[in-house]
Length: 163
Image (cartoon, rainbow, N blue to C red):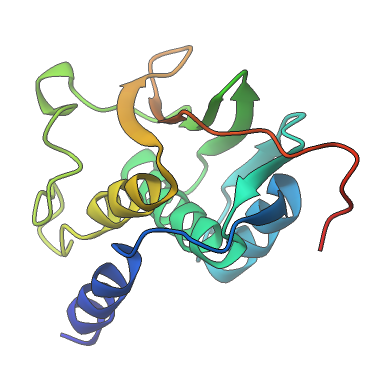
């Protein structure tokens, strides 16, 4: 019940449009998020992701939800990769992946394949993406795992220093 309430409150806060955009060091935020999630024997790999324009607090919440989801569905020894290709930021894992038939519905609030799940995790991810002006999409990772893409991400001006 506590998890459900926390997820519902988090979901309610995430829908607001991001107004105060700042330069965000993606790797630093991902590492902080990884440290707050129970990851067992999972491994985090961060590729050259650089900095983006966004809200660091919401991005951390987004990563926490994606990491929790990867460990929950990919298993304790899953490897999770954070990367960026152009205007697409992604989190991929080497777990079993998301069935193609479910890729459109995984972002709907309440959708869960886990009997203990609240169904808020990827809904929160989608709301955070939308608040930034991005689009969230579920695809297949190299090797068949899950890959969540955030499309339309703006790289930060390299001349600006991180906060």
